[in-house]
Amino acid sequence: MTTVSDITTIQDKFASALDRRQVCSFDIEFVENQTSPLIHSAARFLYFLEGSCIFSLNGIDYDIRKDTMVSVMPWDITVIKNVTEPLTFQKIVYNSDFINGYLRTLYNPKNSLIHLHEAIKEHPILYCDQIESVSLQTCINQLKDELGEESMNPDYDSLPELSDAFVTSLLVSMLVLFNRYIKNHEVVGKEDNTELELTNKILRYISTNLQSKITLEKLSKIFYVSESTIAKYFQENIGYSFSEMINEIRLSKSYDLLLYSDLSLSIIAQIIGYTDASHFIKAFVTKVGCTPNEYRKSYQTDEEILKRKENEVIYKVLNYIQENFLNDKISGAIVSKRFGLTMMELNHIMLFQVEKTFDDYVDWLRVSRASELLITTDLAITDIAIDVGYNTTKTFTRTFTNIRKMTPGAFRKNVDLQTIDGEIIYTARKENI
Image 1 (cartoon, rainbow, N blue to C red):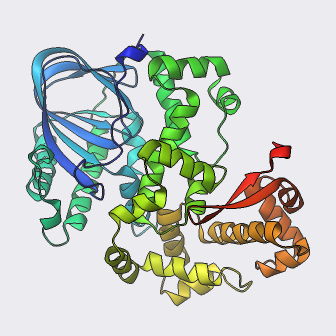
Image 2: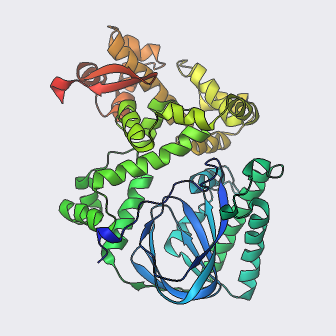
Image 3: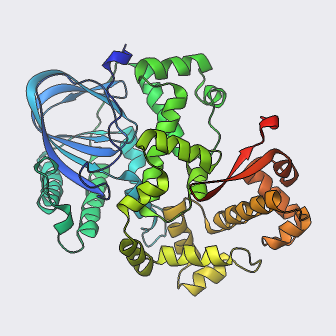
């Protein structure tokens, strides 16, 4: 069994250690001996050019030889074992959240969403034949030529025009090719650590369900193991307690939202599963050493934000929604027509940026505004419902309860408002905790 002493720290969330805004980086690595287990918070491809070893991925052992390609997804746990020949491999680290968001906005003539990562998660190992190797190496070498080697300190500020678009297209091409090729090969690994395999399944579940309340009791029912067993697996297999690991995953998600969006801290806190912005800010400061707003400002210049708003329709759409969500006449049909989009396109870009459909996002904004009014005014709940855009109190109450997990009346009774780091946040009253 893997012990805590074998576990290294969680690897960096970012595709590049040199520039956190990079979508992808390329490097070459050499390994001669067994490695300690690694917990990956960023996706990567490993293409083995030379060597032989056992590659353990989430407790499953796979033989590695020349021309093997491995796909590692966020929160996978890996270890290189039994190195019989020194390894040389190409490493492509990429921002899978960005790529998944990009794929949500791509659709074929059938208008169906693309889910390239789903099959890859189930079949992460590819033994390439000659034709497959040539195709994949063509993409990899183009990435190398475009980005340079990370360990050689490339100048990302002087990349060619439209480099991000070119790199993104190469990554999608690699994902498509990998997806196609794994269907031609049946690769079966040897189960080595069932505890580690289950631990990874739980990590993946947490990372894709951050907005819901995640408890040991809930996970116990989903995965059919006791709460104490899950807590034990976390501590023994990855060296983190259950609460520590959830916090790591939440903060990992927050980095992209801070760098690539202008969403408020309250909204980000809700997206990643914190009860309010104050908990998010406290956890962020403890981990990073600065507030989320300070972090955002250090990586986003005003000029870059303005340029993105001017050039990307998503920001225009989000700004319009922010300005008009209180209007009871706002609708997806009106907004999509205003910006020359179909409803499907509108929902695709909404999912890309805020992981919510148009209707869900409007409801979320309205409930956020209603929450403020409930705490700061004596307005009747019926009047608040109308003020935030609902025609009936019944609809407002149902929507509010679904999002806040309590009725408007209970919220007014049990929650206080504070301001931290310029953000309005809500906390439970001490006498009700």
